Image (cartoon, rainbow, N blue to C red; front, top):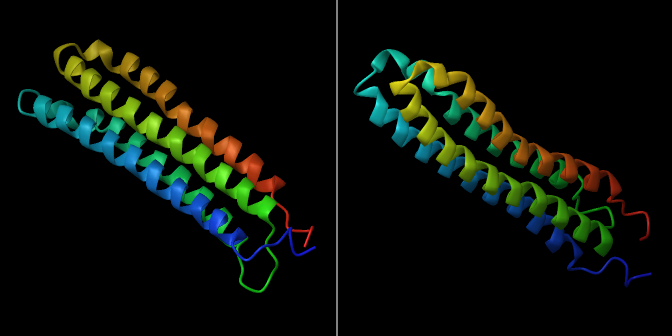
Length: 161
């Protein structure tokens, strides 16, 4: 019975919390920085378009929220008084990694697309709808990771201890 709930099992749960927050925040930070460079570049020529051009920055910030939601859910199931199985730790690690890596990929994609599309939008305002559509497709990558993390989190039970 003790083999199912070793003392080091919560480490994997906390590693899932760390992976979710760090990786998704890194993706959001990269996306914000890269898209912000494009906004700063186009804002000197077309300052009237800046408010509409902030969409990539907002979408990059949502990626970090996905990691935050997953981290809060995982951390909520980690209590010092209740037993915590190795299975639950591994599932929580998988949940954190899934939302973290997809958040990193989505943030990277949003940054590159946001930078290019904002610059194109400053030259041709008809590019706005195209920019938003491509950014939605990039954002959905992070949403897929959140969905998988939520499903995994429901599978992590510590009833075996």
